[in-house]
Length: 231
Ligand code: PEP
Image (cartoon, rainbow, N blue to C red; front, top):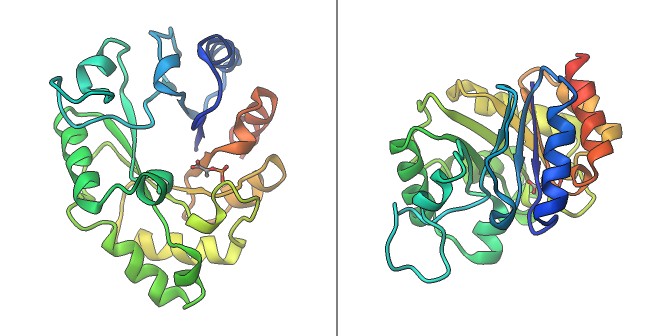
């Protein structure tokens, strides 16, 4: 099982260090991923099942891209896992599928683990599963789904940061459609809470959760990993 925390624009350098050290000291055996903001990246001394990654990057080694972070800056911290295609980057920042593909291909060429996020907005969900899957498959255009270091996160846009989670039936249906073509681990993300983690992780094709809001508190995140460890 994979339990991942996306800090988004939360935590600072000190609180991230305390968070990561605490999780690392628990001897969990689930796979754990933590995505702090860039400014809190560090060379953490981690157990092999725990990885700290970046929420974003600019797909260059280095260069003249004011305000951006290239791969050289991530390499300093031995970052091995990257979030690509998160809905807040697609819909708030306005990243196109072309930009997302450029990031994906760059990260793939570097051999990094990629947590690739897909998911539909509310108006598409309201049209039913066929519309949802056709929307989601478009988000795989230009993406190598056979990449060995790929993890896919299904995150319905309307469920992210809203407190509204998709129903277990809806998650199950989308994950089983994804599983028909994708061998990579499949995560669900979208307002996952401690109380809902077990039921979600028990869904047949679900290999883990990607959590934002509810994971920023280290006790909550620990409880989620404990639930995964006990399944
Ligand atoms: C996320 O950022 O990927 C996410 C799922 O956020 P939240 O848990 O807050 O919905």
